[in-house]
Amino acid sequence: MIIRIDKYLADSGFGTRSEVRSLVKSGSVSINEEVIKDAGLRIDSEKDQIKVRGKAVSYSEYEYYMLHKPAGVITASSDKRERTVVDLIDSKKRRDLFPVGRLDRDTEGLLLITNDGDLAHRLLAPGKHVDKKYMAVISGELPNDATALFEAGLDIGDDKLTKPARLKVYDTKKEYLESISKELRDEYLLEHCRDTDHICEIIITEGRYHEIKRMFEATNCKVEYLKRYAMGRLELDMNLKLGEYKAIKREDIY
Image 1 (cartoon, helix red, strand yellow):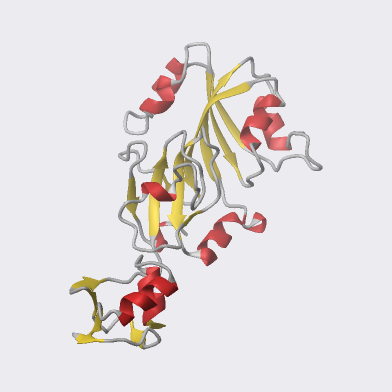
Image 2: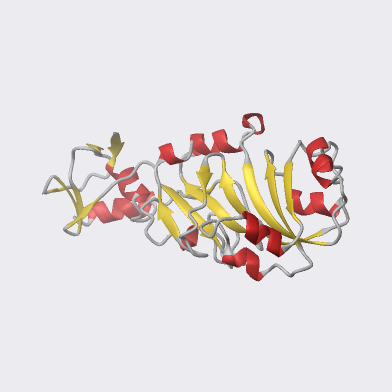
């Protein structure tokens, strides 16, 4: 990839474009062992060797991370007052990472962090109908026809009914434990579940504001705990603990 050296270094986390230009002018940057002073030089990111203060710089046009989002962290790229999901990615090289879609502050689970805008559009565009799978701990008495209600679409106060959603209900914690293999059981979900609660699997294809919570409210129930486990073919690695992440490849996602 042919790219200007100032953009290459800015994308690699060495500051803003103006900060990078100052860095180059100071003689701290070399291309193929030759010190440069022109921040407008173009390089081949795959062939040229770039060093800053004698240390090699690696360049990634795109980065992809699977994050097991914990509660209490906001889904944003940056915030002046609060810690964001992007702040949790300590090993990132790019400065332009963002979360694909959003999870509420108190919602946990799978979150994709990347700088690939085209991929994000493919996953989030309404016309793509990408499945998003959640598990929820529900208090209250679900109606007997809850599965049919979710499939038909629910009135959650918007102009249109929700799109058809698939609902599977485990009436008790015991039923969930008997149905789920040990490898797929989630200790965090079980910590929030009382014996009187339902555990529900919900698959939706849209992402309205507080959609799942509002869907259950429409059936006179309350979401006590919510977690996303899959988005398209990307599934949460159950070995990741809350707040942990791992680098993945584009082909793992879409």
